[in-house]
Length: 204
Image (cartoon, rainbow, N blue to C red; front, side):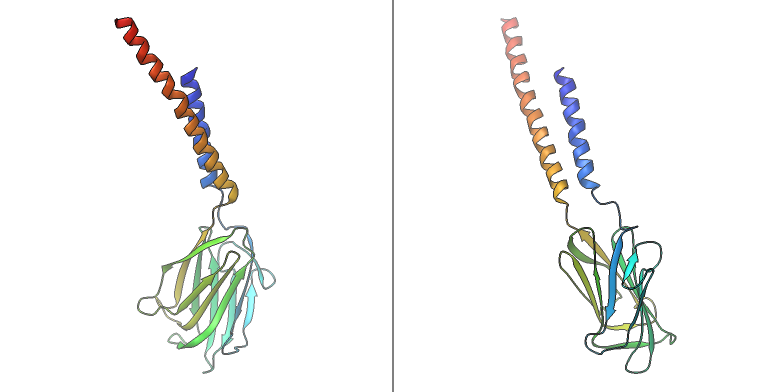
């Protein structure tokens, strides 16, 4: 019976840990909000999304895009693509394949409406020797500013990893699992000690 209890507790602890680790199941299907702004240069940005701007549902392909003309008359197309693994890919393109511009915060993306709290935002792929991105975030919002961009690879693409904060329920599950494991260890210890003393008495 004791062995069966230990096995049962082990199964419960494993299940609780699995539930805690699988609290988030990916971004696909989530409804998000996003808009591209030009805080410094006042570009006339035309925002669009896969629904009615600024609303989008995460799926295959970029969810958000922005079209604008810079102060030098160059046309730009910027996209933000949310992936199921909580990454965001930002890309820039232009009818002029050699387009390149820099100087101050030219544009800024703002995303919100996440069904989780944001714990961190980490760079994954950054253009070599030319990091022009300026990320920031709080628990509910993500901002990504760019003080320059180009239209040609590999300098026209940025990838960032969103790190969701653990859900309170997941932390509770882990705590309950830890207590169940500790209780099982406490139950096993007296059983071993009792068995040892019994063998000594028999030998005497």
